[in-house]
Length: 239
Image (cartoon, rainbow, N blue to C red; front, side, top):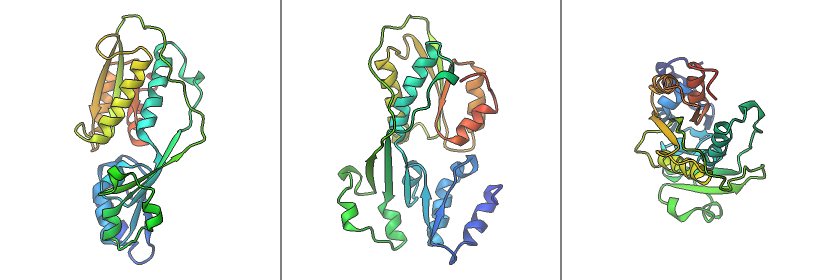
């Protein structure tokens, strides 16, 4: 039972010798201490398993979950529907269309694990020096992205709470996909929408969520349960 950062090291140490892997459930405490958790797991010879790729970049061993860039492109379609007046409760839930497996080869080596060559042959060459990315096609329904009619020039405000730091490539690629998706739907930042960003992979997500709620946007976009919980603490009326 981990209730504070001080509980993390003893909890991981207690697993040493009793198991070979550690599946990490993500909440705000875990997000803030992800890199430390991965270091402690590695020292205890535990392979850390995550649900999102950014934690593999933070020296975790493996992750399996939705492609976050694709999810932000899907978020653009949700945002478009809300700005056009659709009630959030009436919008069908879209399943992820791209699932990816990421392995950090540096961490694998530190753990003394050998990844089969047949597995590595499927790697994206751009990622081979640090991690292996295999994209597995999903069978879930996708949302349409066709360009739509020009929007009126009234400026609509959108809040975005990111779970990465602003200078991290992962976060920038997600935002680029979100903005491109909006642009294809007729929404252009600085013309008919204004996007307010807050970036944090640390303990300030609650404060940044409160800031976004305070500017009263028409919709708030975020990624991950800890950040969604932070937004919900401040509002239940902003979708």
